[in-house]
Length: 279
Image 1 (spheres, rainbow, N blue to C red):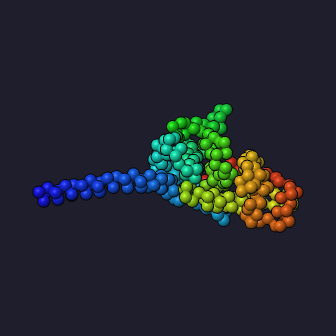
Image 2: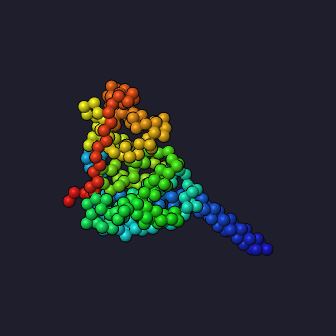
Image 3: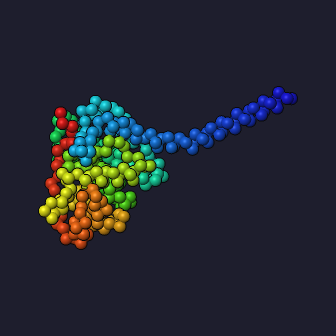
């Protein structure tokens, strides 16, 4: 009788431990998956992206990416496995980090389809279709183009209310903001976007004041509307720039002129040459 009772108690404890383990697994598994989803992309970036121009820009070692293309494709396949239903349950920061990483990783993959025989991403277009308009990306249950990811998923409807994404998505060109040397992460996204913004604005080869004129990257012309949607109260390109006066080295006088729209803004030509490392 004592043995039977002991067995029953032991069995009950084992079942209890098993149930507790299942509950803990259910709670912590999504956190582990979320944390490691972009890990392989993070590793590839750390290995093949290097800062240049005093850290304002980066150069991409596409030869290195090509040598590890199987790892890149494995990561892209992981992204493809994320369902729209799961994605919809994520926080905005997690969604946005996912989309930016997907855009940048697929851009690298597009370059690799013709590398090293490509000098500019613009060479990879098709008749009547730009490289950004090609639908070849399996994501969230659909087939998207790079334009779809940027303009519909990221910018569409101003869901994320985030103009700083223009300093995070990378078009594989010298004129683009730097491809970040690490993956974007939901927990660090705001800090990462802030750093990318300051990094780009402080690049005097693309944004600077000279002879009472403010010279800016064409990004601010193409996406002017995104900087007018009250991000931190900014409702114009000028008021957005005034959020970062130290990055542009603006004097008090220049800030006043910018605020009062008394300074001429000129948009610089865009360099579409591939942001490849120099051999």
